[in-house]
Every structure is written in structure tokens, then in C-alpha cells.
Image 1 (spheres, rainbow, N blue to C red):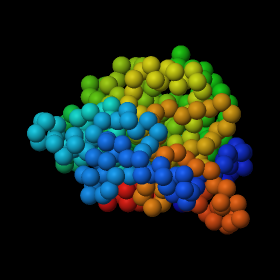
Image 2 (image 1 turned 180 degrees about the horizontal axis):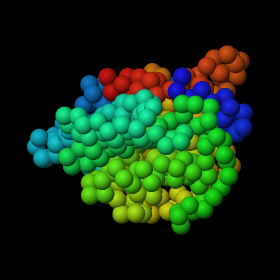
Image 3 (image 1 turned 90 degrees about the vertical axis):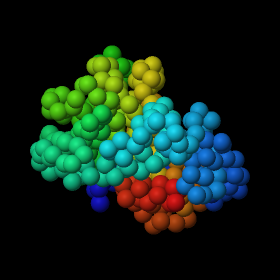
Image 4 (image 1 turned 60 degrees about the horizontal axis):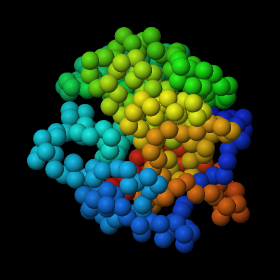
Length: 320
């Protein structure tokens, strides 16, 4: 289990209604039939019929067309497997690739520098925080480790608001997790290349703080993609993040409770994508009232939906 402290966090921070499958209701079913041109094209490239329309989906360009026409447009797939042609548009194939990168970050136990055929990989473990940089010829990918140990949830449960580098107030636990590793990150992250930032769970929260800080310090932040990420800061942080013009995409499994915490006036940043266990894109994260009579399923789904393997499985279903 990648997040053994989840029950501790949910005891300390009372979650909101647990998300459930929107397809179980007639209203959500109707919504899933409203395909936008962008999502229809993405689906067509994957060999599937057009799926649900998303909140804000009209803001995204036809990313599948960009992939399919890479040779014609001159956009190439990088050594990392990412299509870096247009950072302002979502690319679910890129996101699936980044899910795998996030999963690899859970294997970091000690510092290591690995020279591989396509890149140099820097693995660093600082206190209870881990990160990994994969430096390619023309860009880098940095991912932050999620929660592996009970101590990691000390960062998560530390719900104290603190001003952060003139970027508004943030969750102190998340900013302290980032600050803990910052000196070592400065040694290995190349400032002369675009950087793709990603993370899952606590790693997603750390990645969100990192993307804002890196952009402020002059790094070329290509994009931020998170999975199962909790809320990081308040409206002042969101305003500063939006002003920085960082393309940001966050994925949420339909029943994952972690993106619903902390409560109060915390909020998310970036565009949201809600995945069902059937490989559907839902219009929003739905309430779980129909699970009220099945508490054993409720508890199981709340924990299992947060796992990286299930994020990968749900997106793979969508793209297959």
C-alpha cells in the first residue's frame, strides 16, 4: 500500500462527501454523452467513441490531433516519451507516462545517480521526502515521492496556514516538505532546460508548491500534472499560481478522498479530470450517497481509489 497513513489523515482532517461513480445516475449519464470536439478527437485517436464532456473541457485544444500529426507539424516525441509540442493543452498519453514516473519515485530509498541510454537520473531522499529528476537532452522531468511511511503524514496532517515566498498562504506541511529537499534539488535540476513537474498524493502537493517556486525563480516550467493531489493553499496562492501561467492538470479518481482535504478555505489549482473505474471521464467528482448503505465498500473504495496503480488502470481503460 503506497499510503498507509491515509486513515490517520482522514481521522485528523474530516473529509467531505466521498466521490462516487457519476455514471450510476441518470444526470451524469446524460452528461457523459455531451462530447466536446477536443475530447472526441482524443477518444477517436484511442479508437473509442466520444466520452463525457468535462468542466472547462472547451478550454483544451485537440491534443490527439497534435499527437497524430506530429510528423506533419514537426512536433516530435521526446526521449522521455512525452509530446512536448503544446504545454497549454492536456495530453492524456503524456499523463499516463507521468503516472509511471510517479510510481517509480516510490522506489527511492537512498541517493543515487544513474546514467541511462536516454537520460541521467538523480534519485534523492531527504528526511521523509523523496524526489527524482530525469534529465534528457532537451528537458527534465521531476517527480516528488508520495507518502510511504507513517512519518510522511506528519507533513499531510500539519494543517497550518503559512505565507510562502510572496505567493499567498499554503499548507505548512506541504511547503515544509518542499523546503526540506530544496537545497539538494538546486544541485541537480538544470535551470537551462524546460522542466515537467509531476507527483502523486503528498508528492502532488509538493509538486504544486515546486512548480510555483520554480517558475518564480526563473525556471522554464513546461507543465504541472498531479494525481490524487490534496488542496495546497488558499485563494491568494491560487491567484499567484494562475498569474504565473503554469499549465496545470490534475487527475482525480472518482472515489478518492485525498483530493477533498484539507477542508475549509483550501482550494485546488489547474484543470481537473475525474476518472471512473470504468475508464470514463466524469463531469465532476460526485457525492457517494448511494454507498451509505454499504460502509464496507465505502471504506475499501476510499483507500483503494487513491493508489497509483488504480489511477494508471483507470486512465489506461479510458485510452484503450
